[in-house]
Length: 535
Image 1 (tube, one colour):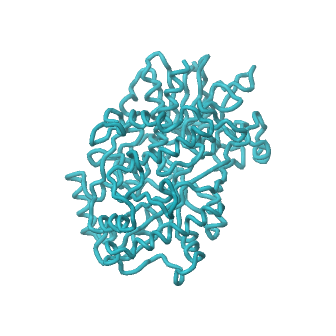
Image 2 (cartoon, rainbow, N blue to C red):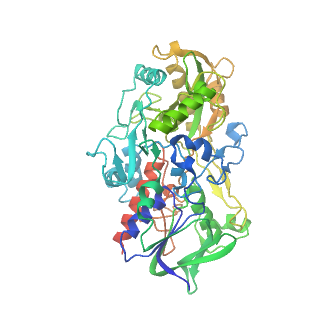
């Protein structure tokens, strides 16, 4: 017997878990959650530093890669995406960053009514359980545990103080009214354990009688009403080698929360998108929607590494005794390096005079490696990773075949905009000047990531081209808006179709000024609010 559902949610990631929680709170609503990955039973998912084990692991990570990037010396970058309950919130660096108020006000000013900062702040607060308690900026009763970073070391304090010497104010809350400042990251963790979206929003409600959760369910396409070509009627998916279908009740909706790669891929597999792209992939055009898969944005981090004269985590991780000490601290006290997110110090700064808000962000790590998650360098080192907060470069992600198992082609077009190249030059100069500040310079032996004498702007840009990686913040491939290139409207409904919404990072009109997990959870809250209000 075919079971019918009021809502079918595709993707149990940062947004999908929130939507599932909120919709299934009404026992009269029948909800199906479909996740392509498995359950979050891998113990490394729940240990904060476990991303070293879950990234690049095909059981928990889609292991995407970009096409070779012309502006990055032809390099192809890793693009991890979560493939388990919790999605990328189960394998990310745990950093809780909302972005700037201006990000959301700009969304609203572009015609996205209901998405201003004053509109979305209550949604951030609704999902949050802030360890310092609730106030005008923070929530205390939400499911998402947010705690202060407690790893305060001599070298991390020196890094913060160097920024202060550069004119950046010290801050204890970059998620408050003003983002600008230098301080320690907030992280989505509690008592030394990761708090993923699945842990926060799905685990407490998974036994609800009106909720069905299916894992290893790989979506192959949308299904449509036989009498109405614009009305979505359900989804088709593959599970353990068998083809399955899930259908909607009258008035029901499919909510795509498959992420900035998965959601446009599902649309294109279903014949929704740019006609020429679909035809090249062997897909019949059902609904021409040229913005699908376009407008892709991501944060590119320039990773500057310094050798220092004090011990860092490199020394502990490269030592058998050090590893044992780290493990013992975590096993007995849920403390130490294993309890930490990917970065300890956050700096939001202005790379030049005249800016109203920060345009660059630093992630400081008291360790160093050639790429995140790989073997540590054999010297005492730290990483000063800096990114442009609001890049202008936009790329695309598109399918190349009608097979849902084939990965789409990812083309970020990093540094293709002149403004981004100029910001990269300023960012590298800012980082290198910080290393010369009195607070930090005494610790530094040498700069590990250098090109020639580093005198010209082109030298600084060359560093950005060679020593950069994604921070794994893809957005905007199903962009929200009211223009012809938008994919969804401010109600998150797909333009020109019925019974389908999209709610994940793909709907962001533009990349937010910071990490994307917290804003994506907010989008899930907003989607649930919109859906329930329309019933």
